Image (cartoon, rainbow, N blue to C red; front, side):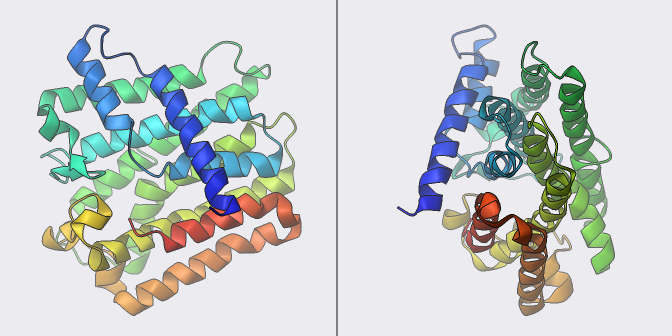
Amino acid sequence: MSDFQAWAVGIQNRTEASLSVLLPASSIAPQRLHEAMRYAVLGGGKRIRALLAHAAGELCGSDSAKVDAAAAAVELIHAYSLVHDDMPCMDDDDLRRGKPSCHKRYDDATALLVGDALQTLAFQVLSQPGLFIDVPRQLEIIQMLAIASGSRGMAGGQAIDLASVGQNLSQAELEHMHIHKTGALIRAAAMMGAYCAEDSDTERLHAVDTYAQSIGLAFQVVDDILDTEADTATLGKTAGKDADNNKPTYVTILGLERAKQMANELYERALQPLQVFGDDALRLRQLAQFIMQRSS
């Protein structure tokens, strides 16, 4: 196992353990809702956003306990978005992370409530008293996640996505959509990890922000490529769903080879601001490579 793999598995395991504690036990009423919440969150996913929070936190000297809370919160928001995204009124997908989607395993009403409850739990985690001595900094982090999740971020991007089915979008319009739908939460994850530091180094914060914007967009381009090239078993979700639904993607707009070139350009752009920090930015560089080389 490589050094990066060992680090990533360690972060994934501690994030899983943290989420397991934070989520209500399935024995607590309402049992079915709590069981479904745990089903939607635990035992799956690469925890990319948690890894980003910790990697950025390492660059900026953040307290790991605070980053644990930030990582858990952003993973809860991400999980809620997937539950709602899979529902019949959205993308209508029966498979997520290699198992039945939440609404297929339970029902539509339960899935809707799961998303609602996971979203509020994320802010409960971040707002707990005593987590930060610097309360204004705590409020900044909460606001980051709120903006990234709402109409100016992920939810707004999803609205644009739904309105774009069957439309001929330009590359600029597609980028605008994904900067919100996918990129906003990825950017927030990294910045939240960086903001968990007691003393903010402006140069390092700026580098994290520039990196996160580029790698967030690269993540989506790679996602579009995988939707074209990978199969359902590898992806853990239905392959080719965007094409079947007549959704614009980087592959449909640019072609496969140009989309791959764009992903590589974004990867290089993400790494550029990290050069001056040497080994302090090692995890962010390794994570960018992991995002580019992933198969699902």
